[in-house]
Image 1 (spheres, rainbow, N blue to C red):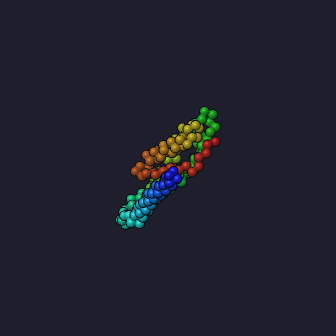
Image 2: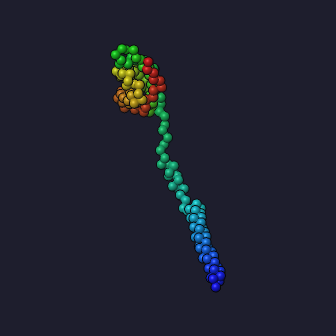
Image 3: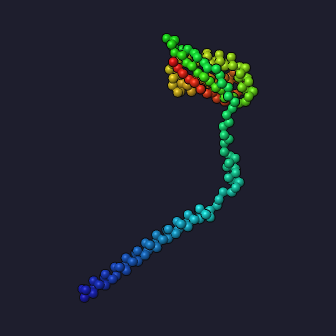
Length: 166
């Protein structure tokens, strides 16, 4: 009798395992089919943007920055405000202007612009021009002063093409 109970118990256990494995396989299969169906729907059957939407997005993009007319100024060599008087600054400046008319006006106003640059640069000390922040401050101040002289025309930007301190 004991042998009969053992054989019945071993026969029942595999049946439980096979049902459990069947449900696990069934659940994984449903998940795989559901995921594949969702992927196929979104990739192939989902709504695509209309042609008008794509065209309007292209129009909304910012226009590329247009480089204005350039005016190259003669180099400046000035003494820095140094107690010993042994520091020199050599700067080459290029101006970016809006139009050719502004370039013509700046060419006529070149003596005023050069005087203003010389007066400003000679008032600076060595420490003020050696740091990147100092150079940015000098550029911003020059731009502001140039725009005062060039009114109503506008100078877009100032570029230092050479900046040497000795």
